[in-house]
Length: 142
Image 1 (cartoon, one colour):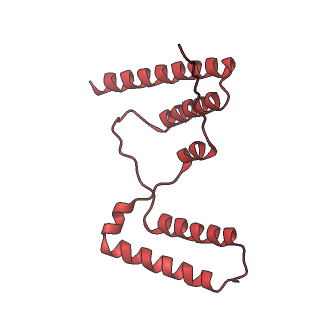
Image 2 (cartoon, helix red, strand yellow; image 1 turned 90 degrees about the vertical axis):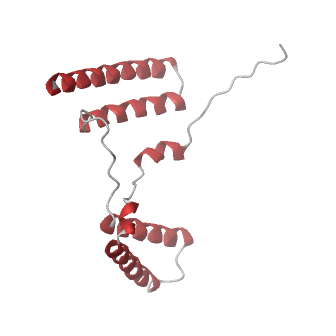
């Protein structure tokens, strides 16, 4: 053996924030009325931005532009609805899933033994909950 290599993946700040990102329903842009409404909203918001000072800081200006685009998209397009592949999967299940993701992120950022044990316990609890929820749905369906 020439060398031992030990590698660990670390989660950056961007990966941790990616889960909370809003997704817009872009399919609505195929409809002519919605597309025109979105274009009008964007035009109006940028017209209001042109009246502001040109001396502003670049980051603040970019923040205003980004916020205007996000607000216009949310108002005219709406948020993307996730397909429901599993009818038994509800808001409570999303909470359990989020809890499992947070435990995993915590373990990746600090891979101590206590975080590893916590992750295993959370995984076990979430799996048990999902299994019971699915069984109850199948029993009620039949």
